[in-house]
Length: 472
Image 1 (cartoon, rainbow, N blue to C red):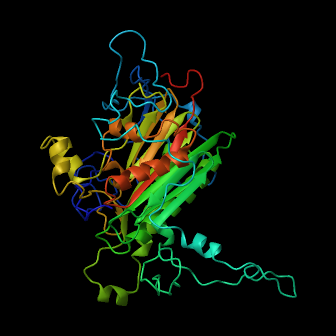
Image 2 (image 1 turned 90 degrees about the vertical axis):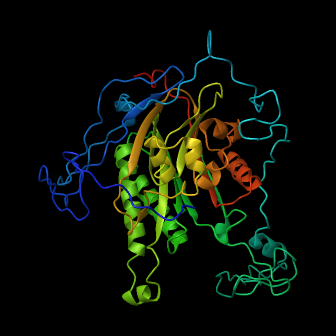
Image 3 (image 1 turned 45 degrees about the vertical axis):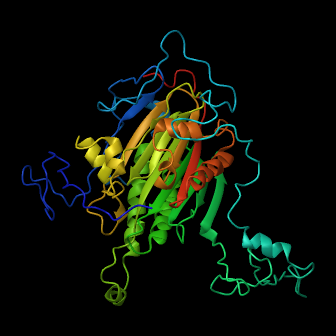
């Protein structure tokens, strides 16, 4: 759950980078028409990720097709693109002191001699997690109702052969005796029943996601979309989008749901048409922004009753795994982490927060520890919504040289495992082959830590790249 949005820094001219004032229609330096839609920003070119360092070939991405063209854009396949430099921001590199890289730890073994990690306090001497779902605070009321259903009442067929379903009264998940009224409370014990969004799980091909309301909030304002498709050449592609509603705005749960759905639909359509994944993710964030903006288009009479409410708003973060390429995009403070299967290799955080704390650290005014300890730390400087100063989607592309897991999450999780090293410690060793189980474990880690916020995480396994795919 993100905090009250803060005003973003003034925009810069897309042509000459001259700072602009609010309301400018043309650049005062070069005359650039600011009403024209600029080309998608290539703010983070492709990086080659690996323990041996970051490679560079200096080759830019192919430019997108002109918008005026009536023909479909030519397919740009990830395998056609060599890695390029990151603009002076290489990923952290970790090498063994001497000799070859250390062998990976045994399956499920703790990274430290002690059963308790000194970095995050995570215990590694717990018994293995069961194969079933991570236990909820209360049973699913639909399951409880099904268990209490008398035989022969739910599927009675009429004389025409069309099956009719008799809707049975809902049974309280707490006392198992009282009926649930239309407001969602038990008539016997008064217990509030879980809602559909309180805990959500989904698998789509190799991708899985879990979202939970947490222990302190009355509703879940997070949302996600996971999916998989194929590029025009038949290469599989997996995607995940995670959105976090801005709680200080009105209807944040609707904003996050609208954004995640719009982005997911746009991504699948673009990838199937052969759009480059980085361009596709940029356009998907724009589509998500438009979907959230549409929520603010309400009758004037509605605004008269709530004149001081902000327009619906949310943050967004997404990731695509396709043909040896890992693309991430975001607006706000939700994050993407890279966790290699070989835990002797370094993990990395692949996004930079649009937040007050991140700005303080970037400006050199505070250390990271000082900034995130401040009460203003989670005030965001970028978000989707009609009240946003401007939309600046960030995108980045990576070419990992080894298999791993991509963790896409809201701050409800990374607040309990902020650094890449801490995140790598809590991701189960078999997350690449059991992503749904791993997502449940990560949500459980946040709940065990206090569950102060809604928590959502999606996991995308990154397969072993083809021989030579990681070289630049």
